[in-house]
Length: 519
View 1 (cartoon, rainbow, N blue to C red):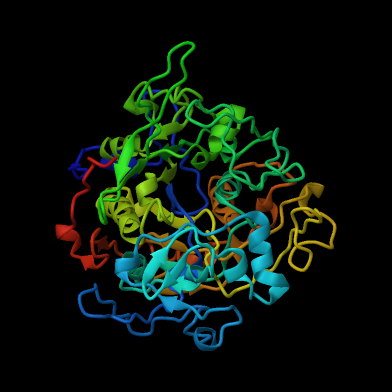
View 2 (cartoon, one colour; view 1 turned 120 degrees about the horizontal axis):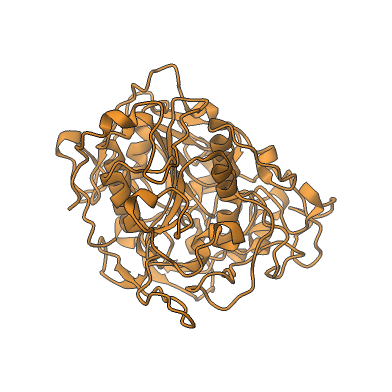
């Protein structure tokens, strides 16, 4: 178990400048009281899939109960549009998934299929286009594609209990979208640059990424030639001397690099909350910084010391997830931190489960809540894509593409290509969950302001006064997240503790410690 931070350096963290042994500084010149941003970037869930009936849960016997706080606002979901539950335009009505149905099929989240599913605003083709799994009398059958009704399933507060409880005490958006239609890699690249164009291999699209292809610089990826030009958020942070890092589970090689022999990353983790099934922890297309020469760590080299974490060094800001826990325990958390869970805890259907994901989310948020970092930190929890799960809200497409092969005209085509003239960047795409956990977050608040994945990047750029000159980046048109914060409250929103197994709220004084054996 990890120890809770108790060192005497707490006072230093509250001062205006903290110098690491490398001579780098955590830039304290911020536009808000936030000095640390932690982004938990999870996998493949739409807003309605997790919050379709929020704040109303069925509360059957034997499952963690959820009772909303008084005056809990209702988001744009099935509660505010009850006809969608009984008279849905798709071939099946939405239906509740039980906690016992936590291992689900991976749906179709491809660039074109998602566009067709929205059908130019009719939102009636999800079963035919993105639906893969079938649920018949409670039995889950993956890969059948015989009716694809699983896409219409949703969880409630008896399964995604932890996230629902976080939403009760902090801020949530019901109007956040994937920056583009499409799969995992697009979401990751947009999170850190907002620009998927110009790849050396275009992954089928007209010069833009529209599918998952590994980076050619990554020893632990599949053979590929994908590399992106230009700069990303890491470059902007480096230019200003702001510490940062991307922490991926399984990044530490099981076979270290040696000349002529690439590193291998075959570490396994288990779905411990469910069935103990093992999967490879690291996913090569889960680390977007590896797609840029300037921020790649091709051979997965570790930091030379704890002091290097967040700073320039041989790891080049790309770390194993275990380095995050080490950094927190040693009062060396970078100013900007991105966290990638092991595949078994990302929430990705088939690889992970709603219950295993909850373990990771609770472990991270509880660790920050019990640390001296809480008073100056915001934790963003969001997702890379929707996986093709049904979401009733049609995105307002602002960046068009007119590729006759990959674009579906009623949704995306028929207009000149958008930012920078690059095709195959239609967006925004499907609606995704976004939660803001911070003492400066509004409590029990739902934002209706439109935003997308690059809005997090926009917040970071603005907070640290960073320059980012890419006219093709979606960050130039991204919505703001400012209305989810109350910086006049002097950081008074208290921390909470989420039980990793049940998702219920525990007293902070008896909050479970993080089991590090799985990381």
